[in-house]
Picture 1: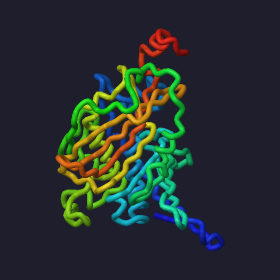
Picture 2: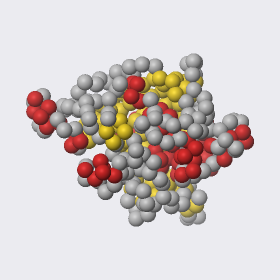
Picture 3: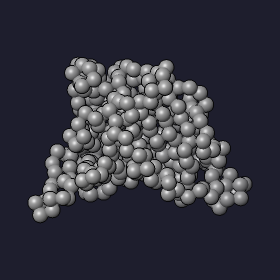
Picture 4: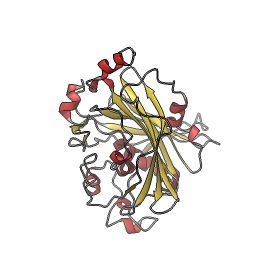
Length: 321
């Protein structure tokens, strides 16, 4: 970790900079709706991409050493990382994480990641403690959304709609996380860009909480593993991707082997020229209690071009295809 701070500008926050890393692509076998996902090379190529991209939250791990250094262990207890994904990364490309600490009297850090050639990967915010959601990247983007003019893929969904059933999830070291996430925590820990003994069987007992903790990037996997039970998807088959994501720990960390109850709600619907977006808030409770442990807001964007009936159904609905 490096920083740059000028003696000529003592009040200007230092920029924290991590090393270049090559994150691994672990979702090539991911399936949903009876088909492969955008992380499959052939599917990605059919949609005009070079190869299957690495999932956005994979990059969160590169921020953990910077933010844990800035905020201490509180980062894993009440940290919030909120990011808009800008450009896809494929395996073999190098990525570097940056953090600009909060200015004096402020609570929110700016974060961003770049490829080795300077191409932006993501931009966002981070904080610890009781910082209002409105201070963060994803809620700010939701607040600026314009009402969609006409949805096709997501037209059956409504803001305020909740998950269809209760979900209880957990993550053990050797637990296969299902067709959405066809790998285990143990496999991820062999490939994670920033390993920590606190994540492991052997070193977890020496963590400040006396147990192994789930890496923040793997909270996305934990919460996504049971997403089909919520029945909050749009029409398909169609191919989607993560366009933005916020993970907030409220009473963390989340622990390996501990069960959690999930509640989901659609908080926004939006569209762009190429996508329809479904913004879902997932609340995470210690199983059997109303103790809020964490929350995630996910912008799941579906590519209009991947839905075979998009143009015909748009015409039927009187929309411009």
